[in-house]
Length: 255
Image: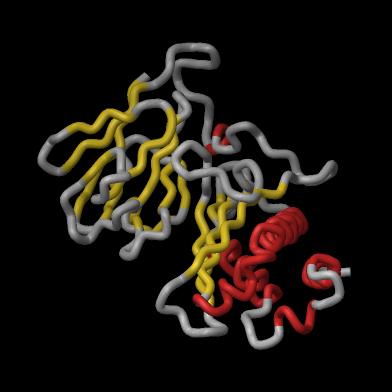
């Protein structure tokens, strides 16, 4: 039985036999799951060692009508979507950071039957907790930080002092990175605010574990470029050139 077939069977139990009535005339959850699978495929990042990283957080915007109709089932539906997406990712042999998370929101401006899926690699710390699915036994294991194997161990060796990392702008300004997550954008919620109209309010995130920095685009309007290539999630190397809007930042690391 395929992931989609198992998902449909669980949905029938979810709405207690009223499956056809509840979902008649509104966007069908199977269409949402299909779109989530396409988003995972579209945002694959190939890591050193051959591992493939895909998004683990999916925000589903539904039209106001569809959202109101599905509201009584939103939490349970998010759980089922997360479970099925985790199964799909596992079958492909892909890697995610932590659990698969699904959040269902109202998308004002969307027509009935229309929906939007936004995917990102979420490492925790700057988004409120949302319904998630914990991988079952036998599912490909997750490291606490799956980014660690992306490249060779840092030059200082295991157990040594943490590296220092920073971004340097074209005009020479330096932005040190703290261990943890740093959101770059032009909005109030950004940790590193840049006055560039081409940058989204929450444009990208940098995750620094003391040894390596991973850059993740947060569904920005104009995208994030590293060394001229558009990226969704990538481990940075010293000297990498990051472009957001019209701003160029160079990644530097010492230690």
